Image (tube, rainbow, N blue to C red; front, side, top):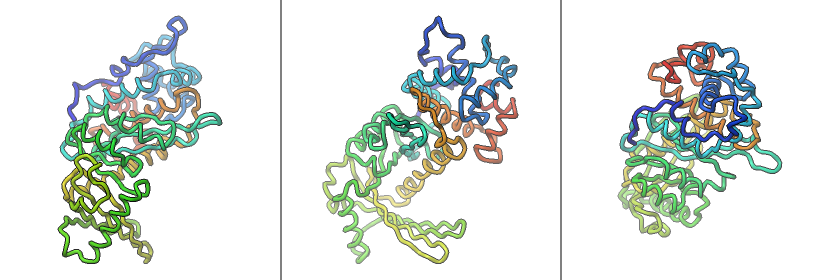
Length: 375
């Protein structure tokens, strides 16, 4: 991924259309967005908290912003974020990320997955479901798009992929995204895919299961690539064996998958408190049958769960977000993605996770200004 010249967040926000009537506008849109980002960076998770914290820091803000009418109220923040078009906010986000993210090297894993903000729904509307693209190695969100429900990820994922620069990357998606159209979109972006196969493709899954059963009975008769890893942590021992094959004729309709080159079986054996269980997971890929390479990509995919979705819930209280007016929930979720990226882009090594960094940002003007790029 090639980066643009470095772009500040404030400059990226200029491209967002102000949805308010000009005669009734008291607060500059870009200034409001800068205040909101810094509020979330400092630990605020709601508009009430952003207003309260920002009022305490008004003198600091006025070193960089005019804020002629002070800090907007939480009601004003809620109305404004409910009106801002999320597609424009997402586009500004992607433009900024593209300018600040170091180039993604060959085989960089981009994991695609969705998350529901569970309390953002109401009687006549579903909760926000956001599909995100996550650079596993860098730990950064590359982009996101909303869907009406989890089942709509199939149509949302191609639209998201087309907005990203993915040349040379490996795109990993769970079984929901294992669709021929999505595979074709990935290849059109000059990237490779690793797609999970589960019950939503029963015939394909059965052919993979039958092949591996036959292989396990006589492994010496079939050429394959193999990789094994062992992890020990918190009383759990997990042994993962990765088998990669290129015998595509054994699969159900392999020709429907663009540039399909291999399929993979992950055999995971877990031992917890003396009890052992074995699980098999299946994948198809446009990569050659190289077990270490594909196995690494599959393992990195879980970063989207551990370093994005889990952090959104634990560090940003995303599942507690109760915004239900217009686009407010969607735009605040993007705001939290911006904050997460700002923290992880900090080049200075620091102890503690995201919650600790937000605590430091709440108390240290220098740290906050450094992360936001004001100094």
